[in-house]
Image (cartoon, rainbow, N blue to C red; front, side, top):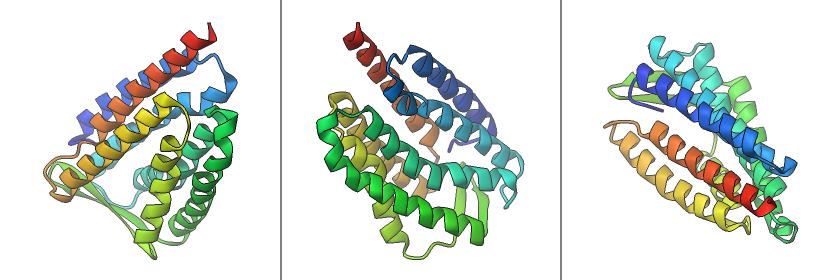
Length: 206
């Protein structure tokens, strides 16, 4: 999330450009899911610019935003980490992967059966989804995403996991205060970190 439609659109385009660089520079097929993550994050920001322009509501853009943010990312990240991680790290990655599968299933069911709405709140957008046991789902989501990175056994991905944990906590605090949304900056920093990881993998490959 960004603080305006223009900011979201600009951030989305920039993040997607980083994603193109990541994908084109990736030399290992197993790295492609993670390398493509900035493309997904960029698309997510662009979708939210449409939510801003629509004034919130429960339209197609709002649903698309929720689909990417909730079930898609909950599965994309642990699958991508599992593919890219060293083989000896994969046994311990089964936990975040299983958490991602379960969390994705529950979130996808919620989005199919319950409405999702967006509301413009000053410089932020608030999204509302009727979820049962949200605390459990948040824990499962964090285990699937942040946990997978921290357990990856790859130094670059572990550092990215730490960055994501700190950045997510900061962005959440700012959003709760309805001061300004910093998710687009967080997504941009994470995407650049992923680009650095892809480049380091390329250097090792050579």
